[in-house]
Image (cartoon, rainbow, N blue to C red; front, top):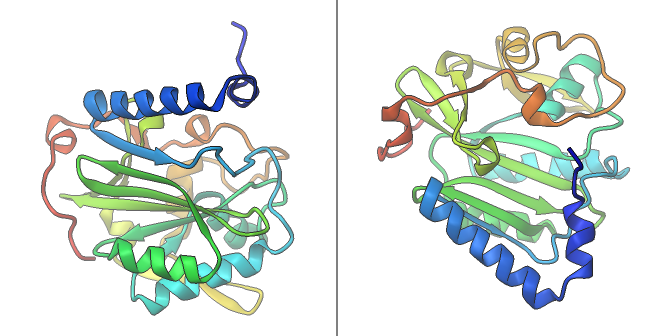
Length: 238
């Protein structure tokens, strides 16, 4: 099957047509799947290029801001894998990943990140609750904040890209945290880091030369139970 480069199609269409299409897509996601998915136009992030040279300082600034707000978080996915396994960011990675846990104030996060010069590029909510914020630094570093919700013995993350599926981790991974040091700064990780990475990647110890589709690489994606899909409870404090 022939694939279509969405960005190249957008460039050939009038901006008014693209805006209308994205508006209708947002309405569809909200009506059918319960997602409210806002993103900037034109989308200012190039996920095809590797991280700019100042990515370590952007990561440090974001984590300092979250610590200032006393938000419980861990560095996540490719960022966590690089810092823990390699002692550095992965050369071919294209964003900074941070998972947030428990209670938070979205307005405070937006204010702090704005003071760092970061621009909000995407905001995803699911059934009224914040699930993701994506920012862009002045140099083009994407910063992906994912908000997890605890339901029973698990924590869940919802995104429209998953097509009705969810990411799921045992809550016990986040009960105790440890740190890994990069550029003289400590970054939080689940204490059972090896098991946590294996849940997401399987063989996480063997480096890859390119970054693939994260949905195909992630092993923590499952079909939600009806109670999880319909949950209306407030997120628990960790």
